[in-house]
Amino acid sequence: MCLAVPGKVMEIEERDGTRMATVDFGGVVKEVCLEYVPDLAVGEYAIVHVGFALQRLDEESARKTLALFEELGLLQEEFGDPWEAAAEVGQEARQ
Image (tube, rainbow, N blue to C red):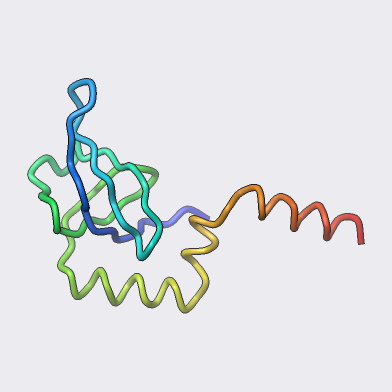
């Protein structure tokens, strides 16, 4: 499953002419392209899908959504370690 997940912009820089940000998704930090939301600033929240910030989001909505995703286990599903997931699948196949 691939979700649009809210995250907080921690740092912004330009790389090869593209605005990029370090974004915190409730403890998981990823690099995100800001070209679709060029005026997004450090400290603001955005909805991110497949590495692109799509729209600004208020902090309260972002926090509620992250808490719900955490409760449902969707953050682990979305951002979990792919090697760990592959090992689990391999173990299940051997049983």
